Length: 145
Image (cartoon, rainbow, N blue to C red; front, side, top):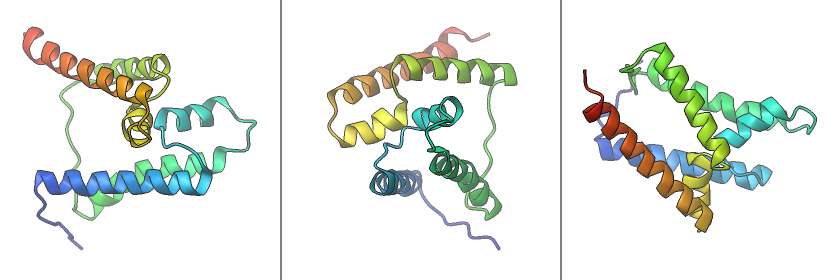
């Protein structure tokens, strides 16, 4: 069954943003927890004694199953990456370091924190975005072979 819908880029962004907002709201209303992915994953990996692993596993599973289902239904395509496995691992480690240093990730600060009008989350999101722009500029324009 092919359920491809002809969305524009804005349509995908609005639909995806609505789903992210809905899932964040559902998580908060059902558990009282913020949908910060680094905190959810960190709590699952590092804090095995709290009895909080059930909802964490379900939430993280949904993050992985959703794109797989969308690809299988033909709604989304699997993207290609412009870097090697080594580059992906280094990038992942840098993001992990940054989330610890910033006491949260883009989902916790950028989505949930901004929705709560947190000044700290506003500053963190500005920092994430600025360094994201800077990284793209450096990689695409200054590191050209």
